[in-house]
Structures are given as structure tokens and as C-alpha cells.
Amino acid sequence: MQAAGDDRILLWPGILAVSGPVAFVLACAGSFTFTTFLVPYYVVLLWMVSGVFAVIAAIGWVSQRAWRRLFSMLVLPATLLAVAFNAQFFWSAGRLAGDYVHLFVMYPRYLAEIEKEPTNEPRLVLFEWGGGFVVDYGVLYDESDEITAVHPSAAWKKRAERVIADRVFGHTPAIGHFYFVGLH
Image 1 (cartoon, rainbow, N blue to C red):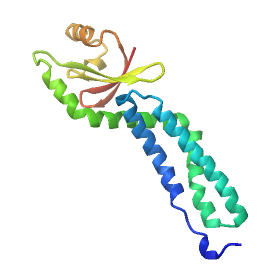
Image 2: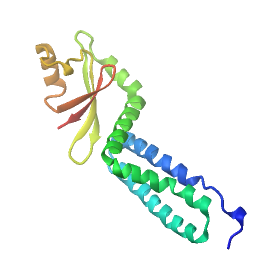
Image 3: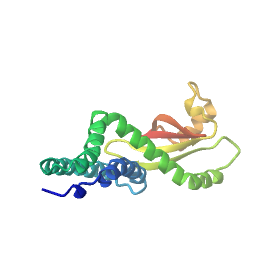
Image 4: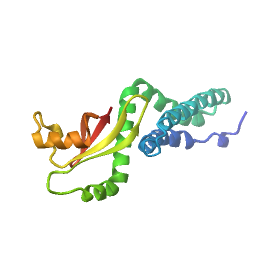
């Protein structure tokens, strides 16, 4: 039997419960930069394995009647269960957060590239990020915002033919004139 002072609240399960999603967002942001699209999957796998070890440790602490350690440990599996039951939402939210992190990190470079473009017409610039299993991703700068128009002008269509050449499908407004896009 252990002494009463040996049973303490553990901090590392709570830290892992928070750092797993943060690491996922950072992995999503970096996966386009380094073209290692499997990194987010590895992060999720490691986080899930840590949850399994937390459950095994919690079972051991039940037999030792280490209630503080037990309850502080259950934070990690509870977080993992919440994510598992809402996996699509958390995956999409994590990917979107990673996209924004990537955009904000690269934002000064993108602005410098955009400034190099001629200003005699609204600028349209595509920045490719790489991709996943089936789809590539990127960000599109559309100064005229005609990508959202139901009937874009002929001049925009001509620029789009030159810049994106029917590679873009789907767009999500990001910030300002930037749009997250899928690429064929």
C-alpha cells in the first residue's frame, strides 16, 4: 500500500490532451511546406497511442487506489473520445486552422510576389502548396474577387486561363483577396 502523499495530480495527461491538437494544426500547416502530407496522420496516431497508454496506466492506478492520478489521467482518454465521436469536425477544423497558420507564415512572401505582378489589370496569382492523397491545395490571390462572381468578366476569364488554366476547383474565402483553393 502506498502512502497518502504519493498520490498526486498529474499534469502531463492534460498537457498531452492540449498539445495533441496543437501539434496536429502545426503538422497540417507544415505538411504543405515540406510536402510531407503524412505528418498530420502520424501526429494523430501518436496522440491516440498516448491515450491507450493513459488507459493502461489508469487501470493500474485503480488497483493501487491512486485516485488523484487516476482522475487526472482520464483527461487524455476523455479528450480522445470527444475527438473520436466528432472526428470529421475536428479533422476539418484542424486542417483549416493549419491552412490559416500556413497562410499567415507565408503572407509577407506572398505579398512580395504579388507586388512584382503588373498593376495595369487586377492581379491574379496562384500559390501551390502541394497536396494530399488525391487533391492538391493552394491559395489564390484575386484582386478583383471575381472568383466568387456568378458570371465573371471576360477579362477575368482570360487572366484565369493564363494563371490557373482550369486547375482550380472550389474556393473558400481566407482573408482579404486570398482564397483557399483545391487544385486538379
